[in-house]
Length: 450
Figure 1 (cartoon, rainbow, N blue to C red):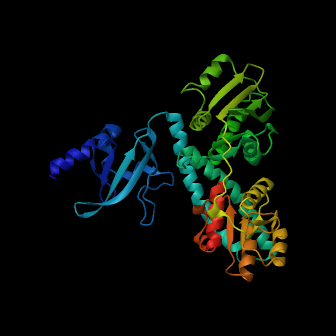
Figure 2: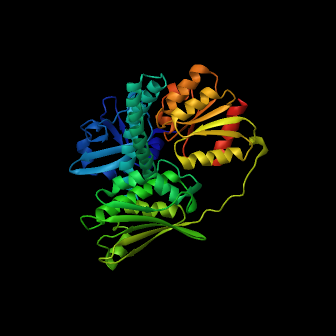
Figure 3: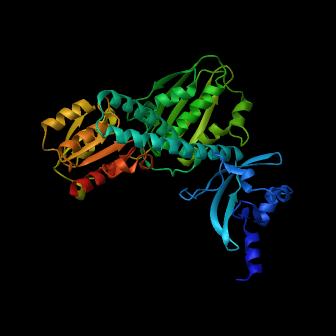
Protein backbone atom coordinates (compact mmCIF):
# COMPACT_ATOMS: atom_id res chain seq x y z
CA UNK A 1 0.00 0.00 0.00
CA UNK A 2 1.44 3.40 -1.03
CA UNK A 3 1.85 6.39 1.27
CA UNK A 4 -1.06 8.28 -0.37
CA UNK A 5 -3.28 5.26 0.24
CA UNK A 6 -2.22 5.17 3.89
CA UNK A 7 -2.92 8.89 4.20
CA UNK A 8 -6.37 8.43 2.66
CA UNK A 9 -7.14 5.51 5.01
CA UNK A 10 -5.89 7.52 8.01
CA UNK A 11 -8.14 10.45 7.12
CA UNK A 12 -11.13 8.20 6.38
CA UNK A 13 -11.26 6.89 9.97
CA UNK A 14 -14.48 8.18 11.59
CA UNK A 15 -12.91 8.66 15.04
CA UNK A 16 -10.27 11.27 15.96
CA UNK A 17 -6.75 9.86 15.83
CA UNK A 18 -3.54 11.62 16.90
CA UNK A 19 0.03 10.49 16.31
CA UNK A 20 2.58 11.81 18.79
CA UNK A 21 6.36 11.55 18.92
CA UNK A 22 8.33 10.18 21.87
CA UNK A 23 8.03 13.52 23.68
CA UNK A 24 4.24 13.53 23.27
CA UNK A 25 4.16 16.30 20.64
CA UNK A 26 1.46 15.81 17.99
CA UNK A 27 2.99 15.11 14.58
CA UNK A 28 -0.19 14.06 12.75
CA UNK A 29 -3.95 14.38 13.20
CA UNK A 30 -6.59 12.86 10.95
CA UNK A 31 -9.56 14.73 9.49
CA UNK A 32 -11.91 13.64 12.31
CA UNK A 33 -9.46 15.03 14.89
CA UNK A 34 -9.19 18.31 12.99
CA UNK A 35 -12.96 18.61 12.96
CA UNK A 36 -13.21 17.89 16.68
CA UNK A 37 -10.41 20.24 17.80
CA UNK A 38 -11.24 22.86 15.17
CA UNK A 39 -9.17 26.01 15.15
CA UNK A 40 -7.57 24.96 18.43
CA UNK A 41 -5.57 22.20 16.74
CA UNK A 42 -2.96 24.59 15.38
CA UNK A 43 -2.27 25.87 18.90
CA UNK A 44 -2.29 22.38 20.40
CA UNK A 45 0.33 21.15 17.94
CA UNK A 46 2.90 23.26 19.75
CA UNK A 47 2.42 21.46 23.08
CA UNK A 48 2.58 17.86 24.38
CA UNK A 49 -0.85 16.21 24.19
CA UNK A 50 -0.87 15.47 27.92
CA UNK A 51 -1.08 19.18 28.73
CA UNK A 52 -4.70 19.22 27.56
CA UNK A 53 -5.69 15.55 27.38
CA UNK A 54 -5.43 13.21 30.37
CA UNK A 55 -7.33 10.64 32.38
CA UNK A 56 -8.84 11.35 35.78
CA UNK A 57 -5.63 10.34 37.54
CA UNK A 58 -3.82 13.11 35.70
CA UNK A 59 -1.90 10.86 33.27
CA UNK A 60 -2.19 10.21 29.55
CA UNK A 61 0.76 8.01 28.61
CA UNK A 62 0.43 4.45 29.95
CA UNK A 63 3.30 2.82 31.79
CA UNK A 64 4.75 -0.41 30.48
CA UNK A 65 2.57 -2.64 32.67
CA UNK A 66 -0.61 -0.54 32.43
CA UNK A 67 -3.77 -1.84 30.84
CA UNK A 68 -3.89 -0.29 27.37
CA UNK A 69 -7.65 -0.66 26.98
CA UNK A 70 -10.19 2.11 26.56
CA UNK A 71 -10.43 4.59 29.43
CA UNK A 72 -12.13 7.87 30.28
CA UNK A 73 -10.13 10.90 29.14
CA UNK A 74 -10.60 14.55 30.03
CA UNK A 75 -10.08 17.20 27.34
CA UNK A 76 -9.54 20.78 28.53
CA UNK A 77 -8.28 23.51 26.20
CA UNK A 78 -9.42 26.84 24.77
CA UNK A 79 -12.22 27.13 27.30
CA UNK A 80 -13.68 23.73 26.33
CA UNK A 81 -13.97 20.81 28.72
CA UNK A 82 -15.26 17.42 27.56
CA UNK A 83 -15.08 13.76 28.47
CA UNK A 84 -14.01 11.26 25.86
CA UNK A 85 -13.20 7.59 25.65
CA UNK A 86 -9.69 6.87 24.42
CA UNK A 87 -7.02 4.26 23.82
CA UNK A 88 -3.34 5.24 24.01
CA UNK A 89 -0.79 2.79 22.66
CA UNK A 90 2.95 2.96 21.84
CA UNK A 91 3.84 2.82 18.13
CA UNK A 92 6.84 3.46 15.90
CA UNK A 93 6.94 6.93 14.37
CA UNK A 94 9.59 7.22 11.64
CA UNK A 95 11.56 4.43 13.27
CA UNK A 96 11.42 5.86 16.78
CA UNK A 97 9.18 5.36 19.80
CA UNK A 98 5.90 7.28 19.58
CA UNK A 99 2.24 7.19 20.56
CA UNK A 100 -1.12 6.68 18.89
CA UNK A 101 -4.11 8.28 20.63
CA UNK A 102 -7.51 7.08 19.38
CA UNK A 103 -10.51 8.98 20.71
CA UNK A 104 -14.19 8.11 20.75
CA UNK A 105 -16.71 10.89 21.17
CA UNK A 106 -19.75 10.54 23.41
CA UNK A 107 -22.94 10.15 21.36
CA UNK A 108 -26.62 9.55 22.08
CA UNK A 109 -28.22 10.65 25.33
CA UNK A 110 -25.51 12.89 26.79
CA UNK A 111 -27.00 12.69 30.30
CA UNK A 112 -26.86 8.89 30.38
CA UNK A 113 -23.54 8.75 28.59
CA UNK A 114 -22.10 11.33 30.97
CA UNK A 115 -23.09 9.34 34.04
CA UNK A 116 -21.81 6.16 32.43
CA UNK A 117 -18.42 7.74 31.81
CA UNK A 118 -18.19 9.04 35.37
CA UNK A 119 -19.37 5.68 36.75
CA UNK A 120 -16.80 3.85 34.65
CA UNK A 121 -13.97 6.05 35.88
CA UNK A 122 -14.99 5.84 39.56
CA UNK A 123 -15.54 2.07 39.32
CA UNK A 124 -12.07 1.61 37.87
CA UNK A 125 -10.37 3.74 40.52
CA UNK A 126 -12.38 2.10 43.31
CA UNK A 127 -11.44 -1.35 42.02
CA UNK A 128 -7.73 -0.49 42.22
CA UNK A 129 -8.03 0.58 45.85
CA UNK A 130 -10.29 -2.33 46.82
CA UNK A 131 -7.94 -4.83 45.21
CA UNK A 132 -5.14 -3.62 47.49
CA UNK A 133 -7.31 -3.60 50.62
CA UNK A 134 -9.03 -6.95 50.01
CA UNK A 135 -5.86 -8.75 48.94
CA UNK A 136 -3.93 -7.61 52.01
CA UNK A 137 -6.79 -8.28 54.42
CA UNK A 138 -7.67 -11.74 53.11
CA UNK A 139 -4.01 -12.75 53.06
CA UNK A 140 -3.60 -11.60 56.67
CA UNK A 141 -6.73 -13.40 57.91
CA UNK A 142 -5.58 -16.66 56.34
CA UNK A 143 -2.44 -16.57 58.50
CA UNK A 144 -4.68 -17.00 61.60
CA UNK A 145 -3.65 -13.72 63.32
CA UNK A 146 -4.08 -13.04 67.01
CA UNK A 147 -7.56 -12.12 68.25
CA UNK A 148 -7.14 -8.32 68.34
CA UNK A 149 -5.66 -8.07 64.85
CA UNK A 150 -8.14 -10.59 63.45
CA UNK A 151 -11.07 -8.56 64.79
CA UNK A 152 -9.72 -5.40 63.12
CA UNK A 153 -9.15 -7.23 59.84
CA UNK A 154 -12.71 -8.56 59.90
CA UNK A 155 -14.06 -5.03 60.23
CA UNK A 156 -11.91 -3.86 57.32
CA UNK A 157 -13.18 -6.75 55.20
CA UNK A 158 -16.82 -6.03 56.09
CA UNK A 159 -16.35 -2.39 55.05
CA UNK A 160 -14.65 -3.54 51.85
CA UNK A 161 -17.62 -5.80 51.09
CA UNK A 162 -19.97 -2.79 51.17
CA UNK A 163 -17.57 -0.81 48.98
CA UNK A 164 -17.33 -3.76 46.57
CA UNK A 165 -21.12 -3.77 46.20
CA UNK A 166 -20.95 -0.09 45.28
CA UNK A 167 -18.14 -0.77 42.82
CA UNK A 168 -20.19 -3.48 41.09
CA UNK A 169 -23.20 -1.16 40.91
CA UNK A 170 -21.03 1.49 39.26
CA UNK A 171 -19.83 -1.09 36.74
CA UNK A 172 -23.45 -1.93 35.94
CA UNK A 173 -24.38 1.75 35.55
CA UNK A 174 -21.39 2.35 33.27
CA UNK A 175 -22.37 -0.56 31.04
CA UNK A 176 -19.05 -2.34 31.63
CA UNK A 177 -20.67 -5.38 33.22
CA UNK A 178 -22.96 -7.43 31.00
CA UNK A 179 -26.44 -8.08 32.33
CA UNK A 180 -26.99 -11.60 33.60
CA UNK A 181 -30.26 -13.48 33.49
CA UNK A 182 -31.15 -15.55 36.51
CA UNK A 183 -34.09 -15.95 38.90
CA UNK A 184 -34.41 -12.86 41.11
CA UNK A 185 -36.96 -12.40 43.90
CA UNK A 186 -37.71 -8.69 44.22
CA UNK A 187 -38.66 -9.04 47.89
CA UNK A 188 -35.34 -10.66 48.71
CA UNK A 189 -33.50 -8.08 46.60
CA UNK A 190 -35.04 -5.21 48.57
CA UNK A 191 -34.35 -6.83 51.95
CA UNK A 192 -30.73 -7.59 51.01
CA UNK A 193 -30.12 -4.00 49.89
CA UNK A 194 -31.89 -2.11 52.69
CA UNK A 195 -28.66 -0.59 54.00
CA UNK A 196 -27.70 0.90 50.62
CA UNK A 197 -31.24 2.16 50.02
CA UNK A 198 -31.38 3.86 53.43
CA UNK A 199 -28.01 5.52 52.78
CA UNK A 200 -29.22 6.79 49.39
CA UNK A 201 -32.41 8.24 50.91
CA UNK A 202 -30.49 10.49 53.27
CA UNK A 203 -32.69 11.91 56.01
CA UNK A 204 -35.88 10.11 54.99
CA UNK A 205 -37.19 6.92 56.61
CA UNK A 206 -37.63 3.59 54.85
CA UNK A 207 -40.48 1.15 55.38
CA UNK A 208 -40.21 -2.26 53.67
CA UNK A 209 -43.34 -4.31 52.99
CA UNK A 210 -41.64 -7.23 51.24
CA UNK A 211 -40.78 -10.78 52.15
CA UNK A 212 -38.09 -13.18 51.01
CA UNK A 213 -39.02 -15.27 47.98
CA UNK A 214 -41.66 -12.78 46.79
CA UNK A 215 -41.95 -11.47 43.22
CA UNK A 216 -39.93 -13.80 41.00
CA UNK A 217 -38.54 -12.29 37.78
CA UNK A 218 -35.60 -13.01 35.48
CA UNK A 219 -32.81 -10.46 35.62
CA UNK A 220 -29.42 -9.31 36.81
CA UNK A 221 -29.42 -8.91 40.61
CA UNK A 222 -26.49 -6.47 40.57
CA UNK A 223 -28.10 -4.24 37.94
CA UNK A 224 -31.39 -4.31 39.83
CA UNK A 225 -29.65 -3.45 43.10
CA UNK A 226 -28.04 -0.44 41.39
CA UNK A 227 -31.48 0.53 40.11
CA UNK A 228 -32.90 0.53 43.66
CA UNK A 229 -30.15 2.83 44.89
CA UNK A 230 -30.47 5.23 41.95
CA UNK A 231 -34.23 5.56 42.40
CA UNK A 232 -33.88 5.98 46.17
CA UNK A 233 -31.36 8.80 45.61
CA UNK A 234 -33.76 10.52 43.20
CA UNK A 235 -36.63 10.23 45.70
CA UNK A 236 -34.41 11.63 48.45
CA UNK A 237 -33.50 14.66 46.32
CA UNK A 238 -37.02 15.34 45.02
CA UNK A 239 -39.12 14.53 48.08
CA UNK A 240 -39.77 18.22 48.62
CA UNK A 241 -40.36 18.09 52.38
CA UNK A 242 -37.97 18.30 55.38
CA UNK A 243 -38.86 14.77 56.51
CA UNK A 244 -40.73 11.87 55.05
CA UNK A 245 -41.12 8.18 54.37
CA UNK A 246 -40.47 5.85 51.46
CA UNK A 247 -42.39 2.57 51.31
CA UNK A 248 -41.26 -0.37 49.19
CA UNK A 249 -43.70 -3.14 48.34
CA UNK A 250 -44.00 -6.00 45.83
CA UNK A 251 -47.17 -6.88 43.90
CA UNK A 252 -47.42 -10.14 41.97
CA UNK A 253 -50.11 -9.85 39.29
CA UNK A 254 -49.77 -13.17 37.53
CA UNK A 255 -47.83 -12.41 34.38
CA UNK A 256 -46.40 -9.12 35.72
CA UNK A 257 -44.56 -8.27 38.93
CA UNK A 258 -44.41 -4.74 40.28
CA UNK A 259 -42.01 -3.14 42.72
CA UNK A 260 -43.65 -0.04 44.24
CA UNK A 261 -41.64 2.98 45.44
CA UNK A 262 -44.16 5.16 47.32
CA UNK A 263 -43.18 8.40 49.06
CA UNK A 264 -45.26 10.95 50.99
CA UNK A 265 -43.51 13.93 49.44
CA UNK A 266 -44.73 17.04 47.70
CA UNK A 267 -45.81 15.13 44.61
CA UNK A 268 -45.55 16.05 40.91
CA UNK A 269 -47.73 18.14 38.63
CA UNK A 270 -48.93 16.78 35.28
CA UNK A 271 -46.18 18.74 33.53
CA UNK A 272 -43.52 17.35 35.87
CA UNK A 273 -44.79 13.81 35.29
CA UNK A 274 -44.54 14.33 31.54
CA UNK A 275 -40.97 15.59 31.92
CA UNK A 276 -39.95 12.32 33.57
CA UNK A 277 -40.36 10.57 30.22
CA UNK A 278 -38.67 13.34 28.25
CA UNK A 279 -35.01 12.98 27.17
CA UNK A 280 -34.28 16.31 28.87
CA UNK A 281 -36.31 15.73 32.01
CA UNK A 282 -35.60 13.11 34.64
CA UNK A 283 -31.93 13.66 35.37
CA UNK A 284 -29.08 11.21 35.02
CA UNK A 285 -29.99 8.73 37.74
CA UNK A 286 -33.65 8.41 36.84
CA UNK A 287 -32.83 8.15 33.13
CA UNK A 288 -30.71 5.11 33.93
CA UNK A 289 -33.52 3.63 36.02
CA UNK A 290 -35.91 3.89 33.08
CA UNK A 291 -33.31 2.39 30.75
CA UNK A 292 -32.41 -0.47 33.06
CA UNK A 293 -36.05 -1.46 33.62
CA UNK A 294 -36.53 -1.45 29.85
CA UNK A 295 -33.47 -3.71 29.46
CA UNK A 296 -35.26 -6.20 31.71
CA UNK A 297 -38.33 -6.12 29.47
CA UNK A 298 -40.29 -3.92 31.85
CA UNK A 299 -41.63 -0.39 32.14
CA UNK A 300 -41.92 2.39 34.71
CA UNK A 301 -45.35 3.85 35.57
CA UNK A 302 -45.64 7.02 37.67
CA UNK A 303 -48.63 7.86 39.85
CA UNK A 304 -48.38 11.29 41.45
CA UNK A 305 -50.28 14.45 42.25
CA UNK A 306 -49.28 17.69 43.97
CA UNK A 307 -49.46 17.29 47.72
CA UNK A 308 -50.16 13.55 47.53
CA UNK A 309 -46.72 12.02 47.09
CA UNK A 310 -45.36 9.90 44.24
CA UNK A 311 -45.42 6.18 43.51
CA UNK A 312 -43.12 4.61 40.94
CA UNK A 313 -44.40 1.26 39.66
CA UNK A 314 -41.44 -0.73 38.32
CA UNK A 315 -43.17 -3.44 36.32
CA UNK A 316 -41.35 -6.56 35.08
CA UNK A 317 -42.43 -9.76 33.31
CA UNK A 318 -42.92 -12.48 35.90
CA UNK A 319 -40.31 -15.21 35.89
CA UNK A 320 -41.42 -18.69 34.87
CA UNK A 321 -40.73 -21.39 37.39
CA UNK A 322 -38.33 -23.76 35.66
CA UNK A 323 -39.06 -27.47 35.96
CA UNK A 324 -36.99 -29.19 38.59
CA UNK A 325 -33.85 -30.64 37.09
CA UNK A 326 -32.10 -33.69 38.43
CA UNK A 327 -29.08 -34.22 36.21
CA UNK A 328 -27.59 -37.65 36.87
CA UNK A 329 -24.07 -36.33 36.33
CA UNK A 330 -24.46 -33.90 39.25
CA UNK A 331 -25.91 -36.33 41.76
CA UNK A 332 -23.85 -37.55 44.69
CA UNK A 333 -23.91 -39.12 48.12
CA UNK A 334 -21.03 -37.15 49.66
CA UNK A 335 -21.25 -35.04 52.83
CA UNK A 336 -21.03 -31.27 52.42
CA UNK A 337 -20.77 -28.56 55.07
CA UNK A 338 -22.34 -25.21 54.10
CA UNK A 339 -21.44 -22.18 56.24
CA UNK A 340 -23.48 -19.04 55.52
CA UNK A 341 -24.92 -16.37 57.83
CA UNK A 342 -27.76 -15.33 55.49
CA UNK A 343 -30.60 -17.73 56.27
CA UNK A 344 -32.22 -17.55 52.82
CA UNK A 345 -28.99 -18.41 50.99
CA UNK A 346 -28.09 -21.13 53.50
CA UNK A 347 -31.43 -22.92 53.11
CA UNK A 348 -31.47 -22.46 49.34
CA UNK A 349 -28.05 -24.07 48.97
CA UNK A 350 -29.02 -26.85 51.40
CA UNK A 351 -32.26 -27.70 49.57
CA UNK A 352 -30.58 -27.57 46.16
CA UNK A 353 -27.84 -30.00 47.17
CA UNK A 354 -30.06 -32.34 49.20
CA UNK A 355 -32.35 -32.72 46.18
CA UNK A 356 -29.39 -34.28 44.36
CA UNK A 357 -28.69 -36.80 47.10
CA UNK A 358 -25.96 -35.04 49.06
CA UNK A 359 -25.89 -35.04 52.86
CA UNK A 360 -25.74 -31.38 53.89
CA UNK A 361 -24.55 -30.05 57.26
CA UNK A 362 -25.16 -26.35 57.95
CA UNK A 363 -23.73 -23.62 60.18
CA UNK A 364 -24.64 -19.94 60.35
CA UNK A 365 -21.40 -18.62 61.88
CA UNK A 366 -17.70 -19.40 62.09
CA UNK A 367 -17.74 -20.61 65.69
CA UNK A 368 -20.51 -23.14 65.03
CA UNK A 369 -18.77 -24.31 61.86
CA UNK A 370 -15.46 -24.73 63.66
CA UNK A 371 -17.12 -27.01 66.22
CA UNK A 372 -18.64 -29.15 63.44
CA UNK A 373 -15.28 -29.41 61.66
CA UNK A 374 -13.60 -30.63 64.83
CA UNK A 375 -16.28 -33.24 65.53
CA UNK A 376 -16.85 -34.60 62.00
CA UNK A 377 -14.17 -36.32 59.93
CA UNK A 378 -16.47 -37.45 57.13
CA UNK A 379 -16.93 -34.09 55.41
CA UNK A 380 -16.03 -34.26 51.71
CA UNK A 381 -16.48 -30.58 50.79
CA UNK A 382 -16.76 -27.35 52.76
CA UNK A 383 -18.63 -24.41 51.18
CA UNK A 384 -17.81 -21.35 53.30
CA UNK A 385 -18.92 -17.73 53.06
CA UNK A 386 -16.04 -15.26 53.35
CA UNK A 387 -17.60 -12.93 55.94
CA UNK A 388 -19.22 -14.55 58.96
CA UNK A 389 -20.09 -13.57 62.54
CA UNK A 390 -17.48 -14.56 65.10
CA UNK A 391 -14.77 -16.14 62.97
CA UNK A 392 -14.43 -15.02 59.37
CA UNK A 393 -14.71 -17.60 56.62
CA UNK A 394 -11.08 -16.99 55.70
CA UNK A 395 -9.93 -17.83 59.22
CA UNK A 396 -12.11 -20.92 59.10
CA UNK A 397 -10.51 -21.97 55.81
CA UNK A 398 -7.05 -21.46 57.31
CA UNK A 399 -8.09 -23.66 60.24
CA UNK A 400 -9.24 -26.39 57.83
CA UNK A 401 -5.99 -26.27 55.85
CA UNK A 402 -3.92 -26.35 59.04
CA UNK A 403 -5.34 -29.75 59.97
CA UNK A 404 -5.88 -31.09 56.45
CA UNK A 405 -3.93 -29.31 53.67
CA UNK A 406 -5.70 -31.36 51.00
CA UNK A 407 -9.23 -30.60 52.19
CA UNK A 408 -11.71 -29.48 49.52
CA UNK A 409 -12.94 -25.94 50.26
CA UNK A 410 -15.08 -23.60 48.15
CA UNK A 411 -15.17 -19.92 49.15
CA UNK A 412 -18.51 -18.13 48.60
CA UNK A 413 -18.01 -14.39 48.36
CA UNK A 414 -19.56 -11.10 47.25
CA UNK A 415 -16.14 -10.06 45.94
CA UNK A 416 -15.44 -10.53 42.25
CA UNK A 417 -12.35 -12.58 41.44
CA UNK A 418 -10.45 -9.56 40.10
CA UNK A 419 -10.59 -7.91 43.54
CA UNK A 420 -9.01 -10.87 45.36
CA UNK A 421 -5.28 -11.47 45.16
CA UNK A 422 -3.72 -14.59 43.67
CA UNK A 423 -2.34 -15.47 47.12
CA UNK A 424 -5.90 -16.43 48.06
CA UNK A 425 -7.25 -17.60 44.69
CA UNK A 426 -4.31 -19.98 44.17
CA UNK A 427 -5.16 -21.69 47.46
CA UNK A 428 -8.96 -21.54 47.54
CA UNK A 429 -11.42 -21.87 44.63
CA UNK A 430 -14.02 -19.11 44.68
CA UNK A 431 -17.74 -19.01 43.85
CA UNK A 432 -18.90 -15.45 43.28
CA UNK A 433 -22.36 -14.45 44.47
CA UNK A 434 -24.97 -14.41 43.13
CA UNK A 435 -24.85 -17.81 41.43
CA UNK A 436 -27.47 -19.98 39.78
CA UNK A 437 -28.43 -23.50 40.91
CA UNK A 438 -26.66 -24.98 37.88
CA UNK A 439 -23.49 -23.02 38.64
CA UNK A 440 -23.57 -24.31 42.22
CA UNK A 441 -24.15 -27.99 41.45
CA UNK A 442 -21.70 -28.03 38.53
CA UNK A 443 -18.99 -26.50 40.68
CA UNK A 444 -19.68 -28.86 43.59
CA UNK A 445 -19.56 -31.94 41.40
CA UNK A 446 -16.38 -30.79 39.68
CA UNK A 447 -14.63 -30.22 43.01
CA UNK A 448 -15.73 -33.57 44.42
CA UNK A 449 -14.51 -35.33 41.27
CA UNK A 450 -11.09 -33.67 41.43
